[in-house]
Amino acid sequence: MFIDEAEIFVKAGDGGDGCVSFRREKHVPRGGPDGGDGGRGGSILIRADEQITTLLDMTQRARYIAASGRPGSGKRRHGKSGDDVVILVPVGTIVRDRDRGNVLRDFTRHGEELYVVRGGRGGRGNKALAGPLNQTPREAEEGEPGGERWLHLELKLIADVGLIGLPNAGKSTLLSRLSSAHPKIADYPFTTLQPQLGIVEGPDDVRFVMADIPGLLEGAHRGVGLGDEFLRHIERTRVLLHVVDAAPVEGAPAPDEAYAIVRRELAAYSAGLAARPEIVVANKLDLTGAELGVKALRRTVDKEICAVSAAVGTGLDDLKRRISHFIKGLRQAASDN
Image (cartoon, rainbow, N blue to C red; front, top):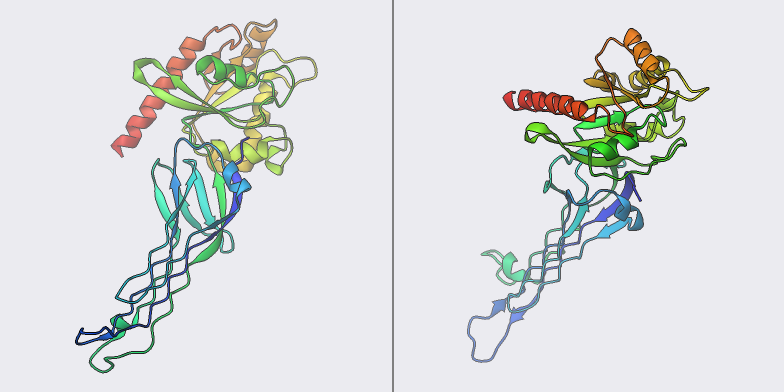
């Protein structure tokens, strides 16, 4: 199951109390205070792991509590510190303080870590408190409490190419033909109910990640259909691959209108997303009437149109070359800056 939002409570361990103890042993001169310090409480850290793909674990376990430190004891023995708790999240997770709303960390790299709450410091025993003015203290410090907070976690997938388009435009089929992904494919709307990722091996050793999101409907930015809750997953993509059905069934929007609907939704959701580089793909070239649909699209869309058939493979090699060339250029520009 794909889960992309979760709220969790995290509580670090309290520090252990210091110990009050005096050394009184037969035949041992110069006794005095020998109480040890309390142990540090365990902290809680979040670590990004590329093997994790969902926040499902966070919905099944909403509370993460680290162990407290043990108290000190006599003979200057310090208490054992509590173990840290590590929470693994997918790369692309944004962690916010739920109550304040501020972003604590946007995890974009594998292995990236953040201590979200720190364990409390252990209290000092009376041995550590002894000094010239008080050589035999009969008190020790209490351990400090560990931090606690509620966190809101939001997952935004990181991909090079984001597939967009109306339902049944053929995005899932295209993803399955270009990559090794196996999304659900059928002839009814919303077969893609959660984002799908696929790795594409392009020419010239260009390897990129492609993400398919549920089809958008008019009004998606207001929550209509399934698109609104998944639009954020293409906010991190470098390129949008806009797939249009070139041979729509009766009653469905014409190719040029289908393209316009999706563009309006992108602009209404985010101006930055609408300005993302875009490759337009006219799909289903194998069906009757597709050539007319491609011509209509080229008359109204001031961008180069790639005509393909994901079902039979027509034009896919050329499309893969174009995407690879585009991605290679963007990566080179990013490395130069």
